[in-house]
Amino acid sequence: MQLYTNPNSPFARKVRVSALELGLADRIENLEVTLSPINPHAALGQHNPLEKIPALITDDGEALYDSPVICEYLDALAGGGRLIPTAGAARWMALRRQALADGIMDAAVLVRYETVLRPATLRWPEWREGQWHKIHTALDALEREQLGETFDIGAIAVACALGYLDLRFAESAWRAQRPQLAGWLDRITERESLRATRPV
Ligand code: GSF
Image (cartoon, rainbow, N blue to C red):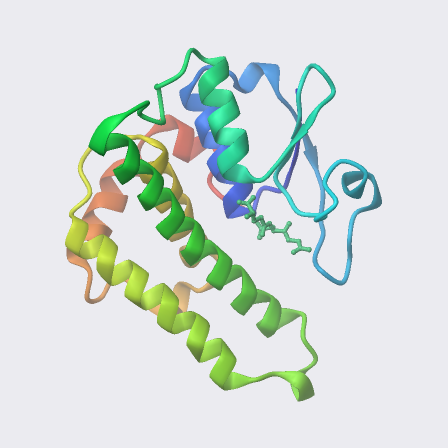
């Protein structure tokens, strides 16, 4: 399998962490690409019309995207139910947490584009504040949820979202009002899959 990826992409990190946790990383060749909405990657575009990473090319030559679909595929390949519970409350909790964390990543990536890509004269501070509002309310929800030690797809996604905030927005001080979440991240960061995929 081949994975279109980048070391700093939080969505691609979610896939790489999942592959490591499932013992599938050795079967995946990482194709590192750099891209943005104004700098698309032609070869990737032949597989993913949305021109986004991550995209996985399976051994059958099929392209899979986006990150939740790829993680589900890898989980199924490893037997199923390993990172994504197959039924019951645990399944919906894990998937909802993934959606919440993906939402943080979406908003943070948009703020990043707004900050580093968009010409200064075209920036719109209220729009950026609106994205930050989503990030903060999602973080508050995670603080209230009190994450446990189960390392399922929800936990993986949350760890990758927080890692991206630390990478791109170290000044955001998201930990200040969220001691439970900060402590959880400190503990979970020791996992080998997270250490091995730490952004550069
Ligand atoms: C989001 C992927 C994404 O935004 C998923 O895989 O879950 N819903 C998708 N990827 C970014 C890179 S990143 O910051 O992780 C991307 O490919 N951006 C390029 C673009 O043209 O938007």
